[in-house]
Image (tube, rainbow, N blue to C red; front, side):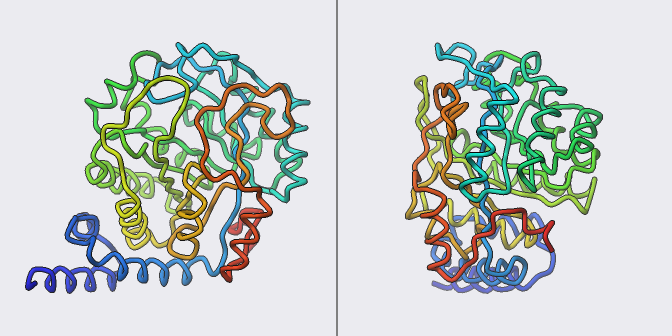
Length: 352
């Protein structure tokens, strides 16, 4: 009991600080913190309301291409999976964007498999420019690029880059990235740093939940985030929590993360990074996503399709992974409103 009381006092002390050190963060995410999850939830809620107000920003992922040259054991786009590959033309992208705009979206995330010879920088620049005609905020989740290439995309109107390290454990990284350029751990690690050097406004980071023990992963993410913030303090950090979902292929998750552990992760990151966007995708269930509204999550995808051409039916191909929350954007928006929050369809930061 005594050790519980002393841990609670330590947590109270950490929550009141302006800067959360790595030692503080270790305490926040420790197993000893689980009995105090409600206290951390309230702290996370209070910080989120103070920094973001009662808003949840909504975005849609738009898959441009399913071609990929990597062999990643956990991914449906794996080069060895026998699926119909598809790359959208500019007219097909316009149809997808029109469908999303009709749903109310003004923030789109453009995604591809990693195949730079098929979806090269000039293709991506064109897609960013087309997207900017329809959307106010355009970000990308594609293959790692050089600082100069990111600068070109910034000039084309790109607002953000999302790049997950997938896992920070080098041995596991090597074992799940069997072939392809993605095998290069260090080049991938430096990618958000290069994006920051190119003055990208928003930089999305994270790891795949389930590949390695999550406490080891999140400490590395804490360090990585601070490295990126040192390069450009103006860049807004966004952290996602992608739990591995079923996909084409046969991959078993060795280190599953339960809902309570996910909650501890989210609350600890909110306390450590008060201004970071915390993102939850439709990988998660509707009940879980609804429960996190107001408790730390500030951005959600809605009505998502992980198929290429999935919104307008432009020759849809296989999904990258299965989604769990299949509600329409309107339904999700109504839930947010019913909880006393405001769904924001464009990037809130730029509208201030």
